[in-house]
Length: 166
Ligand code: PNS
Image 1: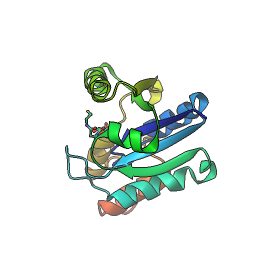
Image 2 (image 1 turned 180 degrees about the horizontal axis):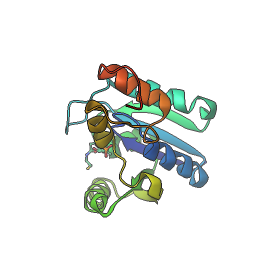
Image 3 (image 1 turned 180 degrees about the vertical axis):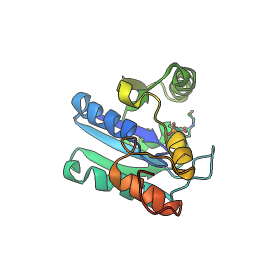
Image 4 (image 1 turned 45 degrees about the vertical axis):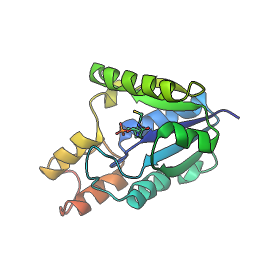
C-alpha cells in the first residue's frame, strides 16, 4: 500500500489543502495528514485539537484512506515512526519554491530514505494560504470559497464575528 504524509500547520485547513489531499489520493492509497503541534513561526489561532477536528470532520467519509494525526519534533523522525517514506507537499506560486526546496533538501539530508513529492496547486487556490485567510477574516472580509464552510464558521466564531461571508 502506498502511503504519504502530508504535513502542515493547518491553522486552519484551506480549500487549497483540501485540493492537495484529494489529488494526493489519486497518487497514493492512503494519506496521513500530519498536523504540526506547535508551529514555531507563529502562535496558532486554533489549538492542535481544533485543527485536527476540522480536518477529520471534512474527511469523515474517507476515514479509511485519510488519517489525521499530529506530530512534534522533526518531520523525518515522525515519518520514520509511522514507517512512511514519502512526504507530500503542495506547490503554489513561485514564492513557495525556495522554502519548499530548502525543506525538501534538509529532510533529505536528515534522512536519505525519505522523499518529498510535490503536487501543483490548482490555480484557483494559487494565492490561498492559512495566514492570508486569517488576515482577511480578521479584517471582516469574505473567506467564502477559500476555506470549507465549516472552517469559515469556526474562523468567524473564533474571531468574534457573527457570520461568514462579510
Ligand atoms: O503549513 P506549513 O507551515 O507550511 O508546514 C511546515 C511544516 C510543518 C511542514 C514544517 O514546518 C515542518 O516539517 N516542521 C517540523 C520540523 C522539521 O522537521 N524541521 C526540519 C525540516 S525543514
